[in-house]
Image (tube, rainbow, N blue to C red; front, side, top):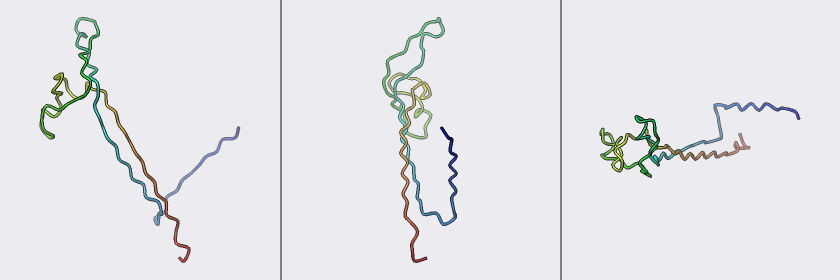
Length: 91
């Protein structure tokens, strides 16, 4: 099987438009509440709900379990859209 190398170069007069958007969700809490005694126990919190408004310290604390947002598993949904319009033949 032959290997191929593909090189994509972007010109100043690019005819492609690329945009991407991503949504971030924080789902189940994974904090081990029994780590200090050598065990493993999670609290069962299924989704992060901010305790306060955005921009406050409480926005990083879960209203359901009281844990910091970093203990919740992060899910990122990314969508990339690439549109191509061929150059005008009259140029």
